Image 1 (cartoon, protein in one colour):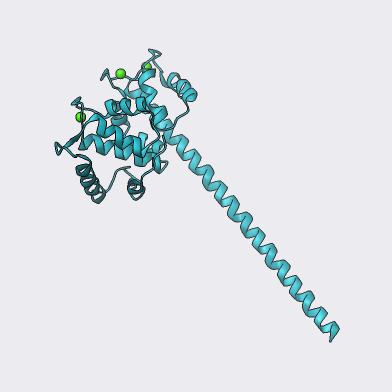
Image 2 (cartoon, rainbow, N blue to C red):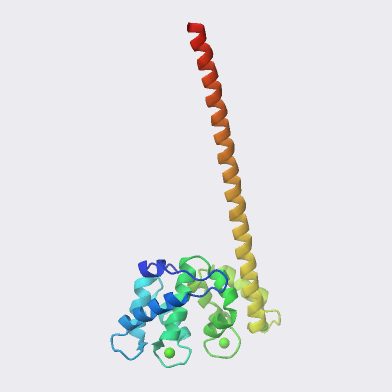
Length: 215
Ligand SMILES: [Ca+2]
Ligand SMILES: [Ca+2]
Ligand SMILES: [Ca+2]
């Protein structure tokens, strides 16, 4: 999923706990109150649809599936606590910290994608992660069976937690690679600069010698 929002681009999740600050929660509460035009402290499916349609590139089906996933109390409406989770997911995606987010909020994510509340995740339920967190569909199919250690075609919480831990390993591996690449580029730039400086000094010397010869 892609996220585009000026307001959300000003908000970031805390590095350690992957949560919003109290100040941002207050801003979000005011934003929610503005969206809640009926003043009943919740957003109905149409309001939630418009909100997600405006901020993301999710399809209609994906939006309604996300709405059902987030409607934890089954009220058919999105209350602030559910809206808050949605916004945290959007910010995690916007800031590319979705793997970290899954790891930190493993239990919550497990509860969300377990739509039927069976305490285990089927391949169909697991698919929600592909569009929310931009996992590749084919890879996710393989990943699902890789972590289904008991082989019952479902992921229980312990299996899902292993998946979440693997996510963060992958993220750290990626970050390490990016840091190494940045260091490599920095060294190359430094080397280039030193060479340039040496060349300039040499030209300067040659220039001085030529000037002396002319004199
Ligand atoms: Ca609800
Ligand atoms: Ca389930
Ligand atoms: Ca299993």
